[in-house]
Amino acid sequence: MYDIFKIKSISQFHEILGLPAPEHPLISFINEKEAMNKPEMDESLFGIRFTSEMYTIMYKDKVSGSLGYGKNSYDFQEGTLIFASPGQVFTSPKKEELEGKEGWTLLFHPDLLLKSNLSEKMDGYTYFSYEVTEALHLSKKEEAFIFQVIEQIKSEYSQNIDKHSQQLILSNLELLLNYCVRFYDRQFYTRTNLNSDFVSDFELKLKAYFNSELIVDKGLPTANYFGNKLNMSSNYLSDLLKKETGKSIKEHIDSYIIRKAKNILLNSNNSISEIAYGLGFEYPQSFTRMFKKKTGKSPNEYRMMN
Image (cartoon, rainbow, N blue to C red; front, side, top):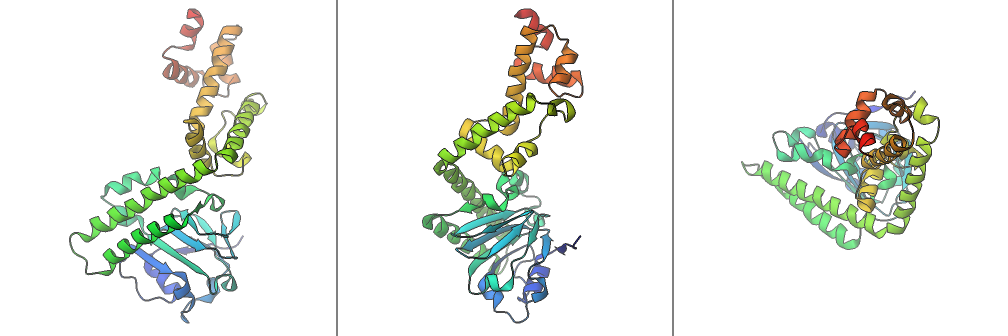
């Protein structure tokens, strides 16, 4: 097992790249081409696995090299944004793959968000947990807008910091993140035909799971199970389903359970416990609570009324 190199601060990241100390301790924009020309760069860190404690947004412009991310790697053929949350593992590219190529990285530490509304919103930006193969592919117009907002962020942290700086940095950062949500929505929309295939495949796999021994052996299916089956992150699959059907993975699973439970309640003499265990619940009480929450009636009440 190879050790994973840990980057704990923006200052440490600058030091590794041979860059001057960051202008702000909690946020920094790094131009990869400029960093590559620094003789002070620690070249022993090319091609290694590493993780950082920062949120990371990376832009790659039509490079032929690849970036390792989790268990996968990705070749960049167009302007692309990749997002990573603190603790995710990367494999850094080899030096020859980066030479002469365009790209930049925006890093910000979670401490930047402390005591701000943005801190509470970060879980809603689910693309920070997408796989690298689910990166955001930008149009030229979108690229230009992203660069414009980045310049605003850089301008704020590069000048003399005053009482307004923190709020303006966070406001522009939130604007950037919100526009990335919009651009991902556009990407989902323009890939509707492909997405429809994924929706159909998901529905088939959902039905197959409940009709197999897995439901007894493993219990209720998880979002990660279906993500792995469809070769995508659970967050990306859930967002895709939400855009295409209006329901997340969990909502799809819950709806299927309710439909199946109603059918069993009306067409069998199975006890509530037998139905609960057969649907993958560890405890019958959990099934009863879920059924009543979704239908307004307990399983017994539903059976008696129909």
